[in-house]
Structure formats: C-alpha cells, structure tokens
Image 1 (cartoon, rainbow, N blue to C red):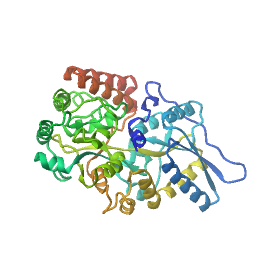
Image 2: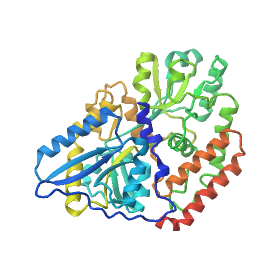
Image 3: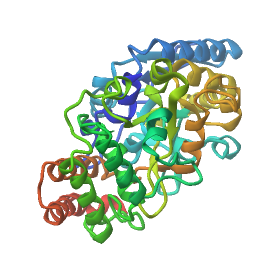
Image 4: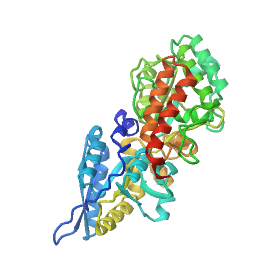
Length: 430
C-alpha cells in the first residue's frame, strides 16, 4: 500500500504548469468511424493490479450497457504520468478522460486542460467533500475514494505509560502530546514518534500542513489565494514550526527512516503518524493491541490532509465525446464499484453507502475509524493554480527548519517565494 501513499505523496506535481502561462488543449479525442464513439481514458495506475481490475470491470460493464460509446483505457506508470499529461497538452493530444491528484486540479484547470465536470448535483453532493475538486466555483474533478492519516499506537504501551487514549471527540491537546512524547522517551524509546520525515515531495505538504492549520496557520491566505503573508509566517505558524523543530532537537522524532511504518511494527517507536495505506499490515503484525488514534489538536481543531486521485474531462474532448465521458463517469460512481475500489486498495469510499458496504470501512470493519477521521478532520490543500510552487516551497522551508534554520526568517523567505510566483503569474487570474 506504500505505492498508494504515493497516490498523494509523490504525484509529480513538478510536472504541473507554472510560470509558463496557459497551454490550451485542443485535441478532440478519438472517434471511430461508423461504430460507437470512442472515449479515450488515461490512468496513472499501471502496476496497481487491484485498481486496474476494478477499472476493467467498470469499463466492460459500461461498454456492454449501451452501444453509443466505447471507453478505451490506457495505463501509465505513476512516476511518468504527469509528464505524459503535460506533453499531451502541448501536442494537443490530451485524452478525453484523465485522472489527477486532487491538489493539481486547479493548476490544470487554469492551464486549460480541464472543462467543468457538470455531473448531476445529486451525485456530487453525496461524495466526501475532499473527493470533489472545485476551482472558481466549478466542479472540475471527482474521486472514488480518499485516504486518511492517524497516529498508530499500542494500547499496552500507552497503558503502561499512564497515557490517556485520545478519542475522535477528544484528541490529544498539544500539551498532552508533548507530555506523552516525554513520558515515552523516558520509558525507553530513543525516538518515541515517527513523523515520516524521511519521506519527500508532496508528502510534506500533505502530512504537515494540516498540523500547521490546526495551529492556526496555513500555506496561504485562502480567502483570496493571493498571498501567504501572515499565514505561513504569522505568529501561529512560527509557534507551530518552533514546536516542529523542537520535536527533532529533543529527540522525540528524527528523519532517519525508513519510510513507511516498519519502525512502529518493530516497536522501535511507540507512535507512528501514518495513513490508512499502512493499516492492514499494522493490524496483521500488532493485532488487537493496535490503536488508531486521531490527530493532535494544536489549538484550532485537529486536522488531516484530504483529496486523493480524482477524475476529470479534458478540454480536448469534443462535444459528443464529452457526453460519453459524463455518461461513463456517472455510471462509474455506483456504490458497488466504490466499495470494490475500497476493498481492493484499502482506501476510504467517497460515499457513506459504499463505506457501509465495505469489509474494512463498514460499521463493524476493522478500519472503520479511518472513515470517521476522514469525515471529521480532512482538510483539502489550497485550491489554487499556484499550489505546486506552494507545496515545493513548504517542503523546503519545513526541511530547513527541521535541520535547525531560524524559524521566522525561513518562513519569511518561503512567503516571498510563494508571493513572487503568484505575482509573476498575474495572481493566476484571481
């Protein structure tokens, strides 16, 4: 499931469009002569047999259900997928249907790759909020699932340390969390907490910007999406990143790796900040002693990252193909398929009815807690075309701070980089 983490964490956001202006796509898909209208469909899912099996079933069922359209799928390795999209856009050969990591959607919509989704509101309104991609008041993408993060712990360890087990209704406060880490370190854990700091790329924004938001800061002022000043370098942000730096200085956590959840499985750390993609393995190894705990409330409510891969329709899709693409998407959002995706990949279905039917996320499912965490705490990353620059800038600043850089001046520099990108792109049209 580590591969599915890269669904979110390593989506190749650098391959997005920034500083290059609009690259309007004009290819109109492909249509067969005399037969059903062909709808080209690209996914990033090559190498993920569970996900591909569900797509194969949906496409087979849809193509057999009517004679007007035929969906034709092409799969790409995730590592080269975004490059394939941007190259296709430049060559005016975008597919009709294409998936995308949630945070990249505004950039691709701004670049002219995507058209509004225009699916029925009865369908969109039934999805998890973070499974719907909105930009400038329009829905451009929708997803079959989302992921969620949590803190993994062992009940026996917390009980022996005399630590309160937090609940969804009462997460740990920051003071409690600090005391927990101090107790666990005193109990013999060299580094009691694995924050996943050995990872790289989009992971940093996905994992740590919700903590920043929980502390009262943010990656940008979301009211206008024109500046990060006061949000990424304001007092709340400085307090959060000072805590973040101190967590490393005090030896509560480190960035030594390995990436993933192995240190928790081996009981080398007592707490692991990780996601649903590692839950099955943890359950198998730790059994009934495993606790899936909510994120810490840094003062402004607990938060976790939201928005995973979603589907959109390109501007290269002609009128007839667009009608077929919408018919396919509407067909594909049946609960039975969403449950299939959830149970084959261990991801959270985007409708409550599909979640209820899931063997993992239903009311009695072993991972039901993740569905609750997603519903209650998920926060999408800023919906702005400037997000790719925000994300890379956030990662650099957070890593510099982790390694001992002055907190305030580092954040001021990050704000300057983000604001300069926004300004140089004419506020991305906002």
